[in-house]
Image (cartoon, rainbow, N blue to C red; front, side):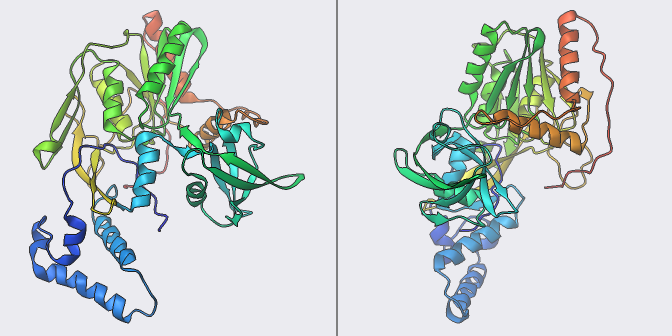
Length: 436
């Protein structure tokens, strides 16, 4: 199976029937899409498959050719469309939709010097945390088989498995002979919500993505409220998005009424208006959202909704500009097509989507505070170091200032003191992000 990068999606809307698509495509009975109704188009594909199977020097399973054809089809669409095999769709649901899976609880990275995967940190409350595993350990083998040169995604795939089953890892640690650790897998819930209390009663919640995370957010809010929270900063920097419905639920917690987001597509099923309701709305404490060029998709929906309704101020840099909705369509063997089916619009009717020839995209914050690439690298390192809850944590970076967070706190203080914030714009010359 290929190790393609799977694009995170903005939404998972109800699937519609494509049950005939996989078989029909190559049998000549595919009836959706005008250009493919002609037998000559289908004959072209079948002829190509015949040539490969009859004359290609090597042996290639028909399933591999079929997967390749579908990958090629989606590659001619926009960058957010994709073909997912059965295994890839399973992993997609675990990582993007549910935020949980059967595993041992290790965050891993790749060490290019040794070509082995290394442990960045074991996750608190998991089998790996309770075992003899520390940050910096190398994983040499999984169940007795070497993983040298394999990408972290492939190694993770081998470590994951059915809960209550066992997996044995061969580890290497500086100053110690290689050793084995046998772990019993359990359900690992990915924590997308990172809360903490700052000074002067200001709560802070960083959202890493929009998997099924609203319950985590409510729990975090309760903990901060119990500590006397007077105001809140929600950090959406480098949040690539996720599930539209989770984003809508979260926005609804801060809005009593009005449109949250509108989606528009080619069919009636793709035209929907999500509105807020008063029930369950949090008290209107001062609220600031931190955004940057890595804030995309569902994160932009939340930022657009709260800003358009005047519920929150935005601090940071212009957001990425991913305003399209993807829907997965099941194929007969359990694989899926992920297709762009709609665009979304903020309550004011704005489309944030970036596209060729469009100069304005994304959401421009109320207070433009940009950070250099070096500063952003230090910020991400700080976040990564904060995840380490076992072993020795690296020393804090000296001299690093999170200018965006500092500006957000000034906006919060000004709101609490009923005055104008003293925030000066910080605009830097940076490389433009890619158009994908």
